[in-house]
Amino acid sequence: MFGFSLAELLMVALVALLLIKPQDLPEIAHFLGKIFFRSKKYFNELKQQFEEVKKDLDFQEIKNEINRGIAEEKSKLEELDETIIVDIYGNEHRVPNVENFRTDLSKEEIEEEIKKLNEENLNSSKSV
Image 1 (cartoon, rainbow, N blue to C red):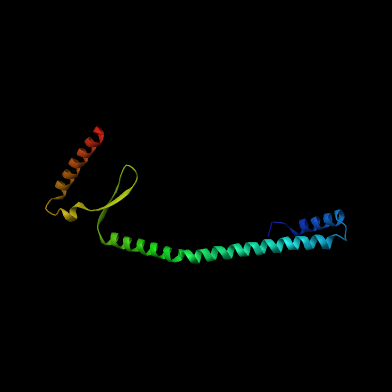
Image 2 (tube, one colour):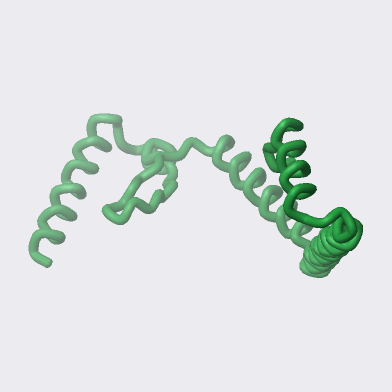
């Protein structure tokens, strides 16, 4: 439990027998037993209180709701064809692909439009 071998435990017992009077051994063993029992009882009570708080707060239901929401969003994203844009702060933004809502433009025209808008954004950010 604490990483002691049998030889080490025997050595501690032998030293205890030499330093402690044999008459005092039962009293010391009783004292150590009480300490062990009380600490174990305290730990079990603490564990039980944590379980009660966990039940009161209903963490499992909250966790299930979050996981359900994540699963729904993932399924929506898989259905849609989207592009992920990362801003300068590292935030991800998911936007529909341009081809899906600008069907009137060819792929080359879309790329030119994007370049033009990127240049405008770049120029406006430099002026700030």
